[in-house]
Amino acid sequence: MILTVTLNTALDITYRVRSLRAHTTHRVSEVVERPGGKGVNVARVLAALGHEVTVTGYAGGATGEVVRERLSAVPGVTDALVSVAGATRRTIAVADVLSGDTTQLNEPGPQIAPAEWGAFLDRYEELVAGASAVALCGSLPPGVPVGAYGNLIRTARSAHVPVLLDTSGEPLRRGVAARPDIIKPNSDELAELTGSHEPLRATQDARRRGAHAVVASLGADGLLAVTPEGRWRATPPARVHGNPTGAGDSAVAGLLAGLVEHLPWPDRLTRAVALSAATVRTTAAGEFDRSAYEELLDRVSVSGESSAA
Amino acid sequence: MILTVTLNTALDITYRVRSLRAHTTHRVSEVVERPGGKGVNVARVLAALGHEVTVTGYAGGATGEVVRERLSAVPGVTDALVSVAGATRRTIAVADVLSGDTTQLNEPGPQIAPAEWGAFLDRYEELVAGASAVALCGSLPPGVPVGAYGNLIRTARSAHVPVLLDTSGEPLRRGVAARPDIIKPNSDELAELTGSHEPLRATQDARRRGAHAVVASLGADGLLAVTPEGRWRATPPARVHGNPTGAGDSAVAGLLAGLVEHLPWPDRLTRAVALSAATVRTTAAGEFDRSAYEELLDRVSVSGESSAA
Image (cartoon, rainbow over all chains, first blue to last red; front, side):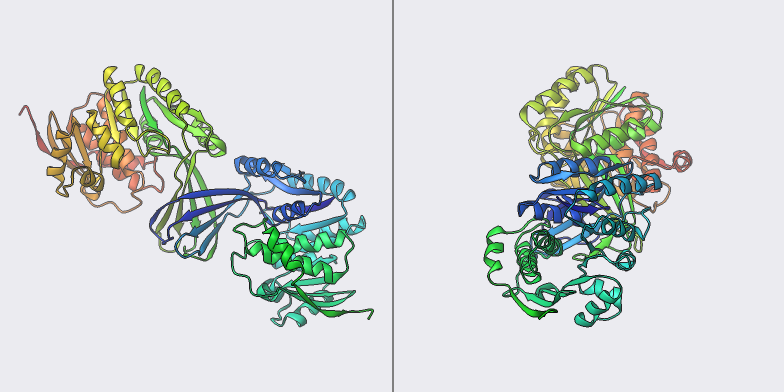
């Protein structure tokens, strides 16, 4: 089983409006609700690829109940979320029918009490013992210590379970110092971590800070991976047009699937890039266009070299 | 007991953001949730004035549960909402901290099945029998017949219970034809109903269409009432600055409170204007500034004449 951790789960709501104009009133023509948060999106993609996935993190309130209800409808996903008193946050994506542009409103998430953080640590330790890999994903809700991911990484490493970290800012900085197996920052997150806007240099710097492997997602330019086994660049055949939301989460799912299937790095990166591009073709995070994915698997180009070569 | 009907109840959510800009991403700094929909706001104001109020209409889904939970915390309000399969709609008010301006996003409401409409009619008939007055408020959710208010008005009139209608568009047009005791349109609703933008003329026309009394709310200019007992104009002492959301609902509460207390029209209008202005001083519909209300009661000016004079 692959374990994904989403401490700040979300009820992702998409509204369709004709055209959003600030300081006016809008009738919403369509409402779609999905379980969200980065680790939940990763889990949905992994489950669609045929992997058994367990989702943990927090859920609470009426919004948390909707998240759990929707999650229970996804085959292959096991709900191991920890109940909390506060309500799971909403994220609202307001999509303009006319322009296709999206306006995003993200709630901060519930306040987590110290006892709730303790309850999560206990649940996590149990779950890690049965996991083939762990992904730690996204922002921290208020009340969770900023060094939380360092703690979770050390637990996974003690249990000899490989751990991937996908977050940003101070939680990323603190997490990297705990030596995760893989981090998957995008260009902005990598620049914020290292101070360098030059991807290869920044990626190497992130490894010096503690990450064993760094897979930087460079948007339409694909992935740059610097690992103990070698360094590679994987790029999609052409610029993919669509909605980039969730592309990074699908890349994480591809990396994890390749990891637990013991694929060599170039194959893992091919999957990650193909899944990422196939997600851009859909409207929602956590979903991908399967025929686009299968077609793209043959068309992703990987260049680079193994350290052993 | 006063009965308020809100077929399209809402979970009113207010977000504070620094400044909303279309097609960008925003962190919400504060989230406030309140039970909403016009009749729910009217009920909260009536309860604060010391009246026993029963709220009916529909509630469903996780959002409906939150509405009921919040409503149960309001002293003096009895929940007689009918459960439905669909989820109660959300309304989102995005308030800019910098400018004070608000952007509104309103969901359409749940689809109501024919059996659910039948269940509501049964509940309504029972409740009307024990009511001293009925207020029919707001929009209709999808699936409720557009002539619904006509039906509800006839039921109330058969039971000799006075009925106030506060809606817009085609539901207002159809409702007026069923001869409600009072309608409370704003300038736009009145112009849409009658085709006239001249308030006195439009108000008289609305009476000819079937309304026994018409109380037009003219924003900062107060209320214009044309009734079988006479015609009056009631105006606040000065332009009130603040948030006009809910001012109309508070005016309805003032009219109903005066009606069941058998006050003469000038006193009812004074209350309605004072409550309306005291609501503009607060941030939320269904709430008012009590000291402003009490102070305003002495300062509203009413001019006009009784038909009998």
